[in-house]
Length: 114
Length: 112
Image (cartoon, each protein chain N blue to C red):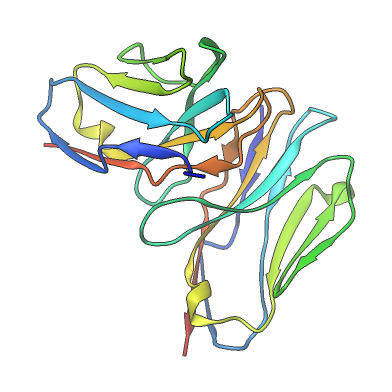
């Protein structure tokens, strides 16, 4: 069985602070994919990143960066110099390689105050 | 190119009724998955269809069914609606059987 845990239910920061969202996963698969999505109040899940289990290289995209550590089964997401527009619910998800059946965490609600 | 589109965006139904939700995948995508997202929780997998065949089913009762058409669009049907079926229903598409990355805006279903 697959499981994704996002232990932080809610995080509140002041604009320009850095913030890290934690994601820990469990799977027996040796090959799998990990995702991060952003869900604004409108409801649509906005794709941020997909990482496969063989690629442990960290990635940076603008103010966003992701740290994948297979040894600790973690895939953490950092926003540098947060902005009010970053306020949303963020989901981490895990998927087997040959099926579109992702397992999602319960999300972390990020509030960035001006 | 248009993204994943879902209709309707909002729906109110009465307990016991039936509902059909629709999804059009991104052009060229052959796989469609459906998810249910109850308020305060992450999305839960319901179905995946690839090339018009069911490729996966989550832990949902038989009241939930789906199908995929030759143009790869899909419908999700829920019979005998319960109050607990109130949720945001999300559709996702990908070009192969692999994990999807692109979601529609969802259909918000309210059962009263």
